[in-house]
Amino acid sequence: MRRFAFQTVDVFTSARFGGNPLAVFPDASGLSDCEMQRLATEFNLSETTFVLPPRDPVHDAEVRIFTPAHEMPFAGHPNVGTAFVLAGMGRDRGGKLLFEEIAGLVEARIEHDAEGAVRGAEIDAPAALAIGGEVAPELIARCIGLTPGDLRLAYHRPLVASVGAAFAFVEVERAALGRAAPDISAFRDLAANHSANKGLAAVHLYARDGAFVAGRMFAPLSGVLEDPATGSANAALGALLLSLDGGDELTIAATQGVEMGRPSALRVRARRTATGIRSSIAGDCVPVMRGEVTL
Image (cartoon, rainbow, N blue to C red; front, side):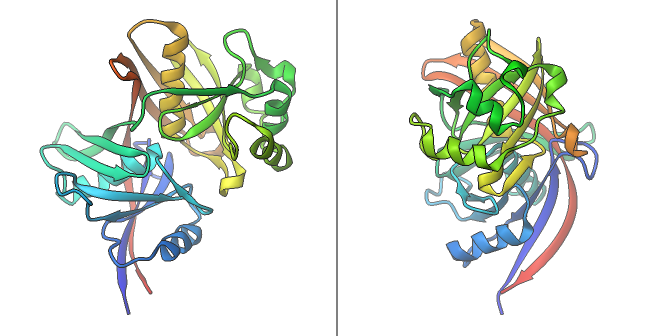
């Protein structure tokens, strides 16, 4: 009988049962791809992470990220939560961790509270901002259960952006944010017909007030009807807004998960660099459960 320890943490929150829950397997050596997927499906959280020895010893770990339906190349809250767990086990080096992932290398910088305890982490998205094609406002409105009149199109039309994982972004009226609801049939149309990014299946809608952003993210075809906090989407949104605003750096405070009863707080920092617009995402974490799986 093989035994694999796991921990769960709530990410992007300082209060238990808020934020986005994550399951972390700190030593997943010996698990097959199929077993990882089945465990992620069993936990049925937005994501579950599996930590493996690094392929290159100068890095700290290989981290694989699974939704209930498939593996992800990169995601925000799994990296923040995994860094929190590993640092709590003393596995960081000088307050930093470097993860190997499908989308590239992800650096995590550990954050501590006033007493020196691990509080959370800031992570760098693995890729510079990449902007894809536009998505028809009528299709996006169908996906999120709103009307085209609920969308704000003056600043930008709905479009695809990524810093490691792709999302369709659309700004909406603040009053409409709470009325949104995913339409699975429309998401199937989006995945099948969006020529700029075949298979696109995630929409992040947001309402902005200066440096404050309230958002929601739907990805029902990935087994995530709604996500309480999406670091990769907010990181891409920060980079996208900087590209539209102009300037050298942008910092935003983002909230998500309020409509789900799991309020989340994310800190986003985007900046122009020699290799394009880069972004980072940070937040606090709270430990919840420990356990063991036998296979």
